Amino acid sequence: MDADVETRSSAGARDEPSGWLGIEEAPPFTGKKTAAAAKQAAAGVRRWSSVVNATLVVLIMTAPPLLVLLGGGLGAPAVWIKSTLAGIGSQSQPKRDVLLGGLLVPGFDEQSCASRYQAAYYHKSMARRPSPYLIKRLREQEALQRRCGPGTEPYARASERLRSGQTDARDVDGCSYLVLISYRGLGNRMLAMASAFLYALLTGRVLLVDPGYGNTLADLFCEPFQGATWALPADFPLANFKELGEDAPESYGNVAVNRSGSVAGLRFVYLHLDHAASPASRLVYCDDHRQFLHRVQWVIIRTDQYMAPGLFFNPAYQEELGRLFPRKDSVFHLLSRYLLHPTNDIWGMVIRYYNSYLRNADERLGIQIRVFDTSRKPFQSVLDQILACASREHLLPAVATMGGAAPPALPAAGARSVAVLVTGLNSWYQESIREVYWTSATAGGEVVSVHQPSHEEYQIWFYSKHDMKALAEIYLLSLTDRIVTSGWSTFGYVGHGLGGHTPWVMFRPMNYSEPAPDPPCTRAMSMEPCSHGALSFECTRKEIDKVIDTGVLLPHVRPCEDMSWGLKLRDPAVGNKV
Image 1 (spheres, helix red, strand yellow):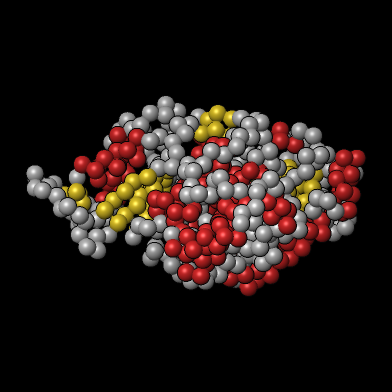
Image 2: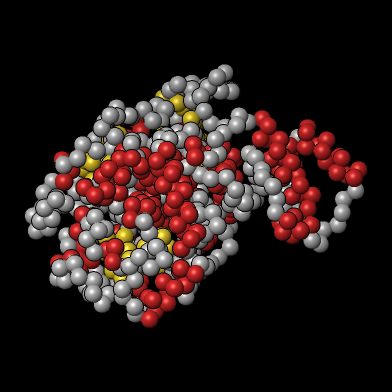
């Protein structure tokens, strides 16, 4: 798991993002500007004459790429240029379903969160379409968030009950709440957000996300719900809720085992679903929400992993989950595309890099590298594993020895171009792969370029600049055509899940000083992430002291390729035919 490596945390850093490029990139299409944005753009800028504006129109029509480079210092005319270029771009591209088959709703301010509707122009078509029932339930959840969320009278009353210690609050205002504690690395947090949203959807609760140390949530993601917020307010009345652990009296395991399900005197129940949670805590996967959780208005959850496979074991949820996701391998892909939209600063980083280095390639390969070693030094065995995987699976062009022969002056007509996107904390792997194709020609005449947006050397939790770069790279991975990921890495899980890719997964070595694993990788059974902490007992019996192989109980839940005790969803109709 990504959280197991050495990290440095920052509790309050909120730095301005430093973009990788200084180029202003016009989006594929534009929406209407808000009055405030237009006023701000015009403030303090001298008016250009109509003659100059007319000249600019001519230049735009003849050489738009040149004008994009001017975007930084022209004030209001620069904004106008960007908008005009966007309009021209939209006319030259085929129309895309920006609402993703009804997954998203129209009406959001496009300028405040460009990625929400623009991502459809960069991603391939949806790997799975949302079911009509999922669309219906999403609209109902949005209405619940608006009716009961922060800023509403029901939320104010519920907060006061929590503050005052009132315990019998069932069915008050018809509003109950699920608060997600944010912790660990970005990949873990994204899996947790999708999981908590699914649990809120199944249990009829309003989802509220702890903004995290440093209040970084707003730097990373747009609000997913129209007319409502998912951010837990700063004045949330429950003190020290981030410090809750399995030993808390309110812990689900304690309530279920030691209190026989009695919630008398409890203001809330705490769900501890860390990847290392005890079997008693994992009993929540088997709770049908009618046992005792419905009697508490507030539920606090801590998780650093993907919960969906565990929820499929609960008989009370199986019919609902089947209606929501007829294709069982679509859960994270659909939920992440609905919920997780990067902010404008991050989206700008994504499209600038994509358009500069990846867009024009005939094929884009993503390689996500995660080394679980605290020394942070590069390992030859990891490079050998990457190259062996790419070679055996024909993901990268083979190289040829020229033997002193003169190379062609120009690439052959129709030569295929391959852009390789490498993500990781160390630059040595990218430099080594690039050197392979610099010092040797490809056997088939392909043109290979190898790129890496950043190399931060170590992971930092809740540090805005670091997390923003990480999120941009996750989205860039999702825009590739094929992807290789490192086993156990939640960063890789999110990247291929967002893109709807069935990845090639590299097995995690237990000792990086030994030769690379053989085989080096395998094709995953689905695009779904692996759950590192699913239950190990049967829900109908709840025998928590008896460990069984839960990976054989359901045809659509199987052990993960990269972690034998992990579980992941698959579509039985597809199986391994990916």
